[in-house]
Image 1 (spheres, rainbow, N blue to C red):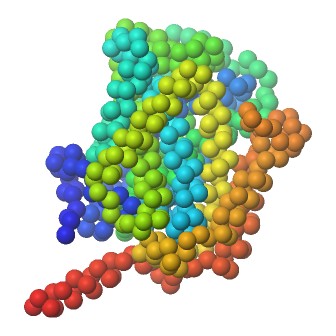
Image 2 (cartoon, one colour):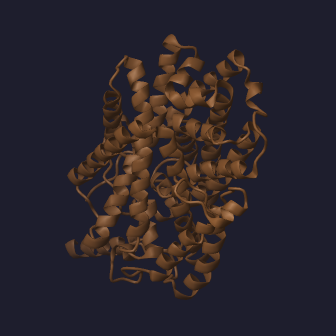
Image 3 (cartoon, rainbow, N blue to C red):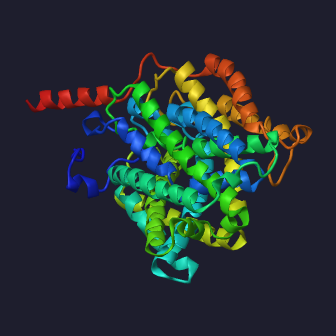
Length: 489
């Protein structure tokens, strides 16, 4: 029998995680809800979040309106992702395995494929920005070298797994607070920050863009947030997990994005667009101080990119095992998937770096918002209002079980949730007629939340399989162990 890793030891820290898509047994549970605060605070205190905030100004939002809009978006998106996080201790499962409850064992491949693309996209942005930082630290002039180094660092942490990821998250929380706090002080001391405000008139369309940028940022954590709470003891309350996750992700995201607004509004969007990482180093003071800031950028982005690689391979395994019915995966397969995933992200990063990173990033975040909102609504409505935490976990690995191969009700509601957004959408490739009528304001994701919930709830209420209680499979394991003991005795 495989035993759990020690809860607190240096050896346990660097020992490769043995769990993948299966439920974490109670004997291997460890940690405190406060760990969720440090992880998600550190993950949000990154150069990418700073860029996300700067985008609101770059695309026409007045600075004060941008800060308020970003806060609203962080809060709304943070509430959603924290509700997903609270599922982890109860189920002990990676986030996207639980989507088999709603979409079916094989049908869950639909949101899973989208999740893999999301992880690749964010992995790409991290490689681009941290490739810049590493090159600046060592004075390298070839962009791809820094990207490769950062990709290797990410791969090692993702292969080791859960425990090391949380440690890096705690380090990132402290380093990010100190580093970006120092940059903020330098910005106020060396620049006319007041000049960032009032440069353009208030626009409802650009204000809603700021809300969407932050909400999209937070909601893209939802497909893997429970991966990092699933090791908490099952007695951990929903309330404690929810609040620690929410506070960490909203505070970290808002601080970083507000800094991005102030930088873009103060030094100029053209300067920031031209060299995001270098601009932060210049504000910090240049020289050795700038180099230290580049280290901060790499450490903090390493935290979130490790999550992306880890979540990416989890989703790939969940897709594959929906057909193979496997519950356990070898370490060799695990490592191979993580390495292949990072290599693919590196290729995308090289391409994005050539064609213009910020345009790619802004359109990427908004596109993700449109496809992940319906999935999130379906998952949360089912878990909290229909199943009410009662899940048959062993059946999630059986394509001929009560959750079936495909749940066409959920799949149909998902596509409805995507299509209903089209008239309200304002993105690079398409602007809907209602968005045009509202002066370019994009409220498509808000429409998707309401419409998907109203359609999915009554249909699923009548058709969804719900057991009488949470079935973990531990009961069968204990019964088998008791039977073996009786025979051997």
